[in-house]
Image (cartoon, rainbow, N blue to C red; front, side, top):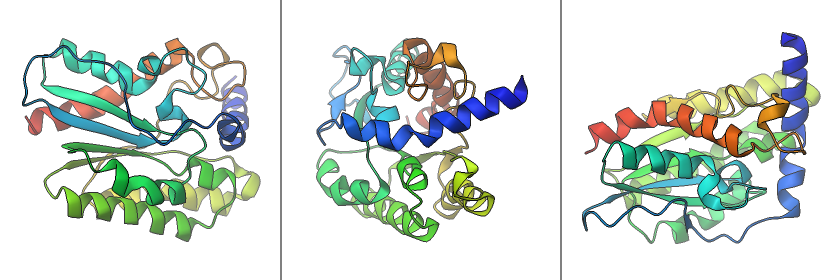
Length: 228
């Protein structure tokens, strides 16, 4: 059963990039969940990612995992608003191209979820690393006091075990280099579980997104509390 789950997960990840490209969303940040007006001093948590962040296939962007995080923030009575800057089909190069525009709004906590589509297309790991580092550097220059969070991803071994291993290592290495808080694998407890994914076997259902959001919150809560 464990082997079957792993196979399902790897198969789903293999099609992530291709499916995301079919219904790419505009490169426009969206508030994932509206927070009640409580204070003009609310800080911003920006989620910068691909279809997993954007909420591909869900009825409303607020159902994506960043929206779940906003619900947790509200319940904890923390003065933060979530901005969902996810774009389906996004690569690290695409993220690098649009990051300056996204940063026109102030960012207090920057959550990076990109790279999966690079891996699925076999883009050299060195290029992905360079692009992600460029994104991180841009955030650091624009908002040097912003807290940084890295959401890691994995790819199936169809490109070779060496590539899959090198790709997986991108995220902890960049996180350590840039002193980012790390969540090693975004789809923990959801990837490869049919009941928690849409018919494409790739993107989480509403219930799956809740689990992803809860897992992200476990990592992010400490960051927000330390930055309050």
